[in-house]
Length: 209
Image (cartoon, rainbow, N blue to C red):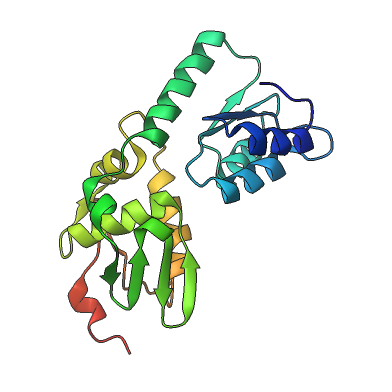
């Protein structure tokens, strides 16, 4: 189903609940960025792909930061779009790993994570998390005290079809730290192991107030 503006896109989404959404950036009434943000709030796991003539890096970065799963620049080939759709849907709609599916809660330091709610709590504070955030934290929890290498993060938290940029993981960890660490500049929950990956060290959190 195709629509001509951003407002109609939101109405159509509520009416038909599509399995995947393809968005242009420059749309009347509500632009594609705002539509993406609103759709992501309504459907955290919905596969969203931007298809746009905008070619600046900042445009692609903004689209991905707002929750899109991919960004295809015009002009494009039909086969490329089909391949990207298949890759994104396999990644986004694949079954949730067993550890996330069965766990009601798990704890990292003073942070209690609720995977099914996509939330964490510290005292009376509630922190919103993305599905990928939960997967990263669950992986660190399962491997507590061990170094998790970058390939393992990409395989278990991004999916086999993802072709990672060298800074994708680091940028995501940096944003996640800003949300969950008491002091993002001196993290205690997600520790960097230079040249290898990251580690959650339970011993380091025992002295937290």
